[in-house]
Image (cartoon, rainbow over all chains, first blue to last red; front, side, top):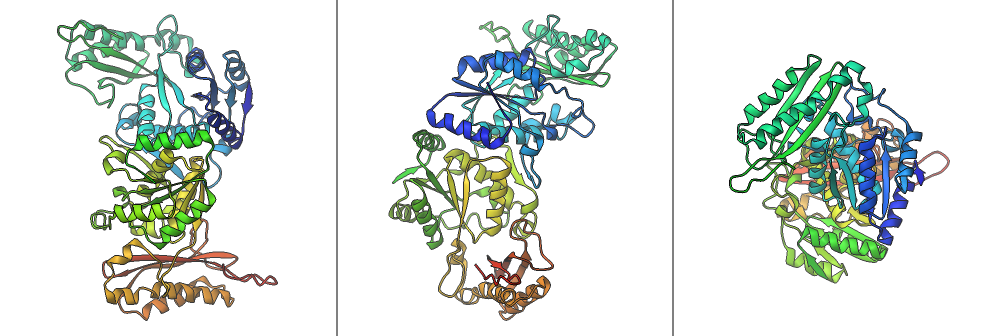
Length: 291
Length: 291
């Protein structure tokens, strides 16, 4: 496996693959690779002929009081995992290479990035959309693999790919969880023991919402209250939002019909956790189930 | 020559060329092709193995009270010129294909697009940056050819290509002029006979500024006044701006040193005209000249 630091070397590598007609898969990450990333790399490996993993802690997607400086950085271990999973390239550019002096261009996605994470982290998706556009232009992959845990991020990236005619297919991959249901995240290392013990309540709340939907409840407000009541059992939790949304536009629903996504964000002390579940409501005479 | 209307067909065509390693040149236009465009197509033809010309009157780069609806549209004649000049493809998508329902992504370039045209047409460069990003992603050319007449547009596109790591080289081509010096533009058809007679004053003013610089004047304020005095000879003219700028950042200069760009915009009645000149000031002991 090759580690590439230079943007122009990475571009040359990708252009050569493009010329040879090699199907290239791409896994963009901020490093601190965990089982969730491992699944993304494996999926890319099985779907594509060559795999590039990027590790870049993108400063522009962190807010001024967020955890940019303490975000975990561990390139050696990351490289080990990439090598073990058969990645061909680990692309790890410096912030200076990605944002040279005089940098002044931004990509922004309006509708789908406004609510939820966008409302709580106002500069976040601007940073994501810009860096993803850059990375896709540098790597030029046929397919890019993203974790469904960041559901809204996937929606934003899907929208920008469609709107800007980027030639990459986006492949969302299922959230990987700890045995107790907590979604695996690089930020879980920030949790104290007590917070870690409380953390699975977010997934339990989403499951409670799912159960209500699968039992036939159509009232989104009621389902939301079910989730909030579950969260209320855990005194350490501060709720940022819990919502019942259209899975494409991410607008909140009143009545449930067909597919919905349950989105949640909580704080445990200073640590922010997000999670989500895609649910398919029963429709009359068809008896569809969760997926 | 092939006329392509569909975005996906255009993408497939470009991808096939990319795979074959064909050097592709691209001339993005709003149609109403004239001698300036002819020069762009010829330059592309001589530098590249295949040439795509796009004709798309982009609604998002016109302000609410600008000339979008009356902008000249003449696809048949445009196709004739493209065919005659040896273009391989004329890409003419519909507004609906470029901006389908739900479109919500914008690309914006901050610094270089703020002044001059950006100040007089506040939404213009946002529209330009977004559509150029889209077109470059659809056509994926090795080189894109732009007229120097739209000097600031070239600067904006160059910046976004660098910032977003787009794999296209930008090639600015010299402004083509009428025998009396008026820069050729699709908008010249709007001029009345009296306005047309007055229009070359813009180029004459720029030339007066150039002459002052070549004679050794270093005082940008004085050069600017020289240009304004020339324009004042023509009563039909309303000046929007005349400026002496750094040729890369487009910030106004106080003292002249090395290369400068003279930028101008005037109105003749309802018609807005822009033009510019790149000038290289004499430096001591070298006797450099205009270019």
